[in-house]
Image (cartoon, rainbow, N blue to C red; front, side):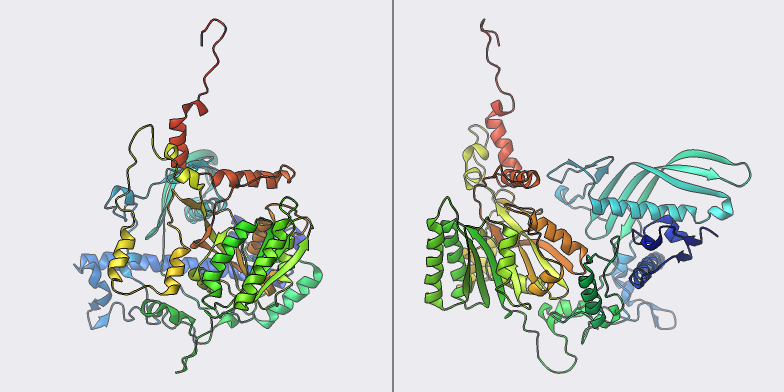
Length: 619
């Protein structure tokens, strides 16, 4: 009874931590639950478990169907049109209809570690080896600690395996407990799902008859299959339900933190009216709409009105902190002129300008350049003068936001960034007021002296081998568009684009300084930590705050946002954590692994310095 009627003795903190525990899964009642938000959190969690169970049953039925029709000699691509005796269709609803049950060719594939047949060596998906660390052949860091998401995924898999093993424990008078994961292999196949091979150390306990306890090892071969794609359309720019806003305002008054409902110490509201997030004209056939014309996703009307949400004309306000670097700012303004000013894009620019004691003339020259562009184009470019105040990026961006309205879409940008029209389109699409913020992963250029240097690209006197495939895609595109001159907009986009490959740069996965967010959402989560001075760290803390908030964080690689290379000077007066982050960035932007390997081959004394000979001439 203590197991199924579970009582948590931690008082008000009961069930505020992770719910992925055996005692939570085995119980039929949980006590105490004193907060209505925790009640809805528990409700959502168990509903998700039920959804997972139904999906597993659906997969089993699909596999049974696939196996049965195979025995009947029905070809796989004709299963969906197969008619049972009596004229009953096996799958009455087709793709795009409400009752469509999914593609049986994919969902009905048998459990097999070799479902994907690679046609070439480069198509093979290798396993990663898991022990105390994770070892990968496809990662730039071949040995590293097990990342949080993978660790959680393995914990989920092991817990589910143990529940399956112990399902008949009462009838058999024994229970098996998980002790340790000794080692394992894992890989992710993008088409089918995740494969795991786990070596588990278990403890066998028999409590009926002759009691005994023994340690046992078992290999588990597991496969997590992908199911169908679910699509939910959300309104763009509409406020959340009224109860959600009321709860948030009360929490703001109480000084509470906002955290995701899957995280411990839940403090957010808004689950009450989850159903009210339904959208006018929500998808009746999401897949068919996506296949026919993607922009129609933005249409939510049911009638014949052709109104489309004015997404692409929405004004974006760039907020850019700047200290010195007048020459780099001039390059940025050339980019801004070609993409924004000449094409009359709905973009404003707010520059938060600091006086650099090393280059005091940059302060005046920057203001003169801004005045030139304002007089020439009569566009919204504002300068907020911070004078000789100590530079702080977080404080600068916060000051720049004061020049914006609460409902403005703002984009935090640095003077080293290069962008084009596609960048602006993605900012507008991926930033959704009250719902989502946009953290693009920008492409960061390597040192051009390294990229183009001979000692970094070949060994000794060997000839440089050109890539025969280089530019073939551009040539194919030119052949397709032969005879059609490019527009000024297309030419500007080409001018501010770069070839994306491993030799020219890398995607800055751990960079969080570039952000698209509505000012209202920024204020709701509390903004930057203004106690941080100098370079870095403020963006990381804001990212962590947003992850814990009830806003979705959308993060993806954006090849149109390019961070131009510049030398990094790490100030030794920085805090230790900031200084180490700065050194890491400086090393990452120097060159690729290939460049470093060639340099080491050409300069072996770097790895194996020659010892100075002694007085007798012996080495």
